[in-house]
Image (cartoon, rainbow, N blue to C red; front, top):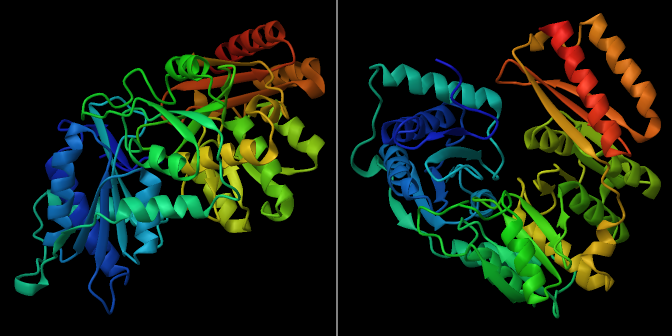
Length: 452
């Protein structure tokens, strides 16, 4: 069996890949593994369970709750809330485990299960591996030890989660955002109620789109993966800015008052300067992945802020931040982690802090985002090659060296083997788009020649 857990939990087509039986079995396995690890020692265990609005989340939530309760875990059902809300409540309520049912920005037929450890942190890889092993062992017939009588878990609705999370968001703001008009695209997802409430309570005039989830329309032509609607809405309503979430609202992208996109790199740049001003940017360092635009790196160098780069994936950003105590990190996709206030990316928090910077500085988002210039970036996927030899091919190394010499200090080359497919990703940045395309094309040909 291939590994069930990916970089962001277990994901697949609901009721095909991810079934009720699997959701129940993984939940029971998680309870047993955490019990073995001593997490529940000396007290009756509790779990927080939330979901996004997908129709499949209704039956998958029921399966997860049933599995946990059958294993002796008391369950607090918080209903439809963003992933970072479930992580926050897991820590805030002193729960031993958090479970979020969501497939983030994926289309509606997909769903996923993500487990959080005590404190709202992602489970360690070794615990995920153990959960998967125990799940597989019992799926093939080994009986579970099951509590009976008063030993079974009890299930409660926890309606206070909404307000507690919103108050937490507001408490993270350095200033109010009175006077701003903000368009919010909620992707018909998990933040459809939370995000508008938080922005309104912070003082903004709010216009919402994509805020009517019906279980079937999540991410459908809206949200952070489809920005056309929010760009038009910001201009139509004369708004100061727009914030677009994905389905589980663990990330966001922004739009300035002209309707121009502000991506995750630009958001990081704006927040880095804002946090440094109020002495909140620890070690004057920001963490990002190697896929961040070179313009971001150049801007941080110019502003005297140290940039630490990691492998692609928010998990690597978070690991680097936690290991060294850094306060800010994120990805170009808009997954921004503010570690003083969240244990995972939080799109609503990010959007609020961006709006607070606009309001507090008296400058437009367009002007603030101008701290960095996005250099043209070309990405080519080269299929059907031996991706394992990217780092060992002399022919390819020579081609990369030639490309880097041509681009100089205002360009960059990145060759990255796919983690799941037999292909290599070629990324080239340059001051000129035509140069970037030409260099990327030559490198793609070199990859085919050297690794084909």
